[in-house]
Image (cartoon, rainbow, N blue to C red; front, side):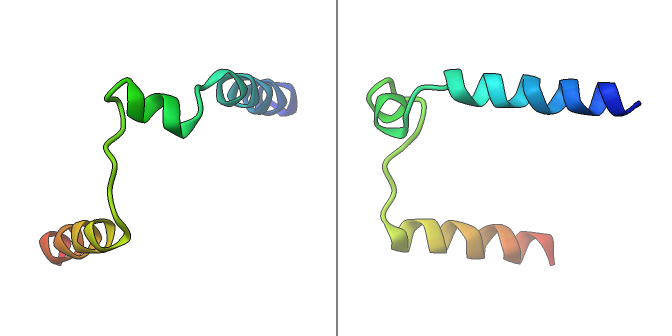
Amino acid sequence: RLAAKIARKESLSLKLALRPDRQELINRNILQIQSENERQESKEAIGARLI
């Protein structure tokens, strides 16, 4: 069980290490550019839907 947990952590670390940086994801249209205000509005809208 412990070995599986360690293997899972190592697998996640490897995948995160291979992930492109934020700017590259934005350039490839995988992430959208958002201002701090847009991010806050999005969080509030999601919060309102959850209540």
